[in-house]
Length: 294
Image (cartoon, helix red, strand yellow):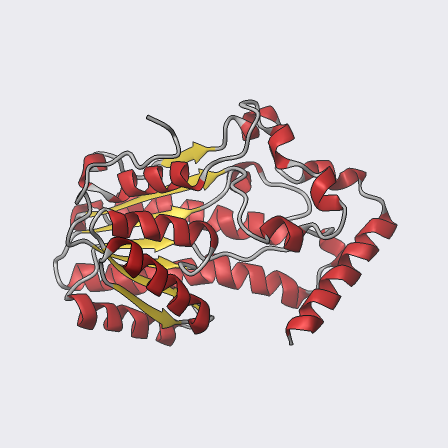
């Protein structure tokens, strides 16, 4: 047995409909794929429909279970309601909401425009409460139990320099998680969260830390167990928390980071060592990448 293997019984999520925001790539894709492997009906959403369609095709070919994909700007409540209605039309009901979509900038805060700050907070916090409100109200109105799982971060409770918009937004999601765990438990709705440490995804570190800085800032060096996480480890934990196996867990935030935050709170605090000229180079590199995509 290995931590890179699935841990739950086959069909542990059979006939459960799970909505995953940011489900087309990265950790969202990995968690969604494992949910499907366990028998779930999937609804994956993000802003890029072409990526969602590729992911849906890949998961369906692997598991044989249905995946509905739909583009959505989670900052827009009307679009969120549309996704919820599509999910209900496709599968009859929603059982689980996984708020995973996120955005981030690694930068000294004084270098950020208010628009950049807004972008991160709107995606992470507004997007999470938009989906939570839409789906939660529907569950309550229809007297249906439900399960909310939010992806936060260890600096949600410690704070961290150089990722201040993300820290602010994730702290808000953390507060929402714990608050609704109490308020909505009477409706049969559980609310929990996961705080992952370093789980590398394709291109993620190169986007946040372009150039040679990606190699210099090796996340594994800050993890006491000496390695970064495997996507399957996170998927195992997420599947457990959205399953009935965890029916007595409510209002909890589970850290899965190999001890990183205990080793040094604030994942990005060490970036204080970066000189001003390197920040300039990073901004130039990001601008070039952004321009190439336009």
